[in-house]
Amino acid sequence: MMLPLAAFTVAFGLAFGVAAVHRGLADWEAMLMSLFVFAAPSQFAALELWHPPLPLLALAAVTLAIHTRHMLMSAALYPWLEPLPRRQQLAMVILLTDSNWAMALGEYHRGERNLGILLGGGIALWSAWVVGTGVGLVFGGGITEPERFGLDVIMLCFLLMIVVGGRPRALMALPWLAAAISALMAYWWLPPYLHVMVGAMTGGAVAVMLPGRWFGATAS
Amino acid sequence: MSASVAWQSLAGIGLMVVIAYGSRVLGLLVMSYVPLGARVRRFIDAMSSSVLIAVITPMVVHGDGGTKLAALAAGGVAIAWRNPLLAIALGMASAAVWRWWWS
Image (cartoon, rainbow over all chains, first blue to last red; front, side, top):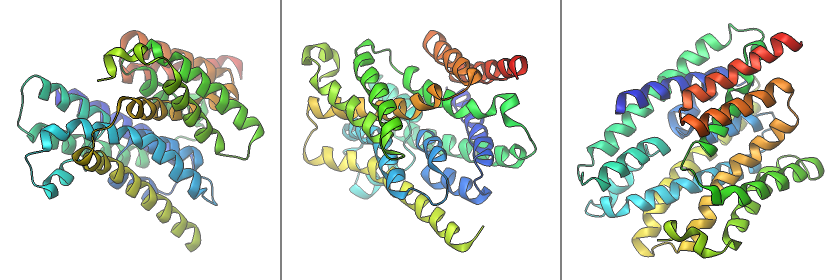
């Protein structure tokens, strides 16, 4: 179960490395990100904003918005981690990402209480991600016309896949539509980089305004 | 690369690290004091996927035909088969083929 996931992660890391080379990031910048940020969606989103001078505020806002999801994930793990001392609890979530979280939580619901699956899964994915990034950085520069091979759309496809490839939720259609339209209008008429925040806020606000009973199953 | 640009990158990456780890920890800390309400959860859940939508939309709208086709292919595969690597591979392939024919 862990092995195919790790193989996917090497490929994603490779895609990130290649994309980073073509966005003009230095090797050490991309590597530092993979080593310490370890979060594909925010790293890909950061590539979009990576022109000097760096828009630090926009970068922080986008990262924050993407990562609020991880806040929910670690909150869901709390019952499992509760018996541990606080310091170990905090250490366990360092390598928390979407896929190992989903896998570990599935095991927890099947009765698994051994935390090794959370930690081990995290370590395996992290190594795969770092190795993939390295390979992508080394070979990415050898490709002179990235568009001809469709390399410039990796980032787009990846983000799209994260959004629609998760749980099938028709009730997100309205918030997402609102997010897309408001982001596009902000992109045209507001100062640069604000469109991401505008879209995120609109999407969240619309979801809150929908009738609560639509969310019956998830409102626990 | 000049020194000031390098410092800027370091600051940017540092910022990302703090936020990325902070959010992983914050969920635990918040839960140990107050459980999150349903409305707050719903807002956060919708916001964190909407932020990706907001990044993608202008890329697709202002992209060339290859980009649009790639988005269509990758999105379709992701919904139909839930296979991430296949989605990305087909997206890249369709962009490459489109540009092969039209440019």
